Length: 145
Ligand code: RTP
Ligand code: MG
Image 1 (spheres, rainbow, N blue to C red):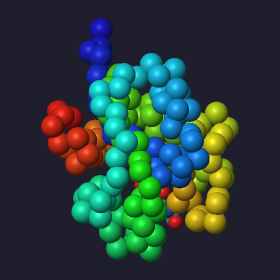
Image 2: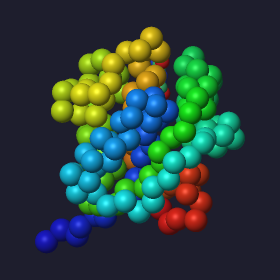
Image 3: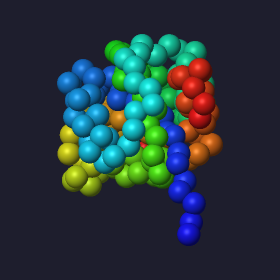
């Protein structure tokens, strides 16, 4: 029998999602999927925090606009736990571009292009166990990844 692989992942409802009143809908989908909330907090990001969080994107053409967008309002930051929840939440979120994200996903059902290309796509989810560990430490320093 294979061992269960219980993971943690860092999820953000981005400023567009909070502004549009979609936080509850995102939380509902996460709970319905069966993941557990380990931490959940409304937060104001800072430039320093975002420089760490988005280090992999530094220097890309969309980086400055992305940081400005992420500073434009509060985010709902959370840590989820469950078997394969890193991949599972990415699947709930859908493709990066909300215009073409599959119906049934958070981005596909609730997102679209609002004049910022693919920027306003409602949620963030860690993309690997390494990213999850790094991002949980950035947003929730007191928690174990
Ligand atoms: P996320 O990190 O937010 O979960 O999204 P992701 O993995 O699907 O996308 P990623 O490539 O990591 O990009 C991070 C966020 O940057 C914005 N973005 N804008 N060409 C653009 O204008 C562009 N590309 C990416 C999006 O907000 C994306 O989620
Ligand atoms: Mg990403």
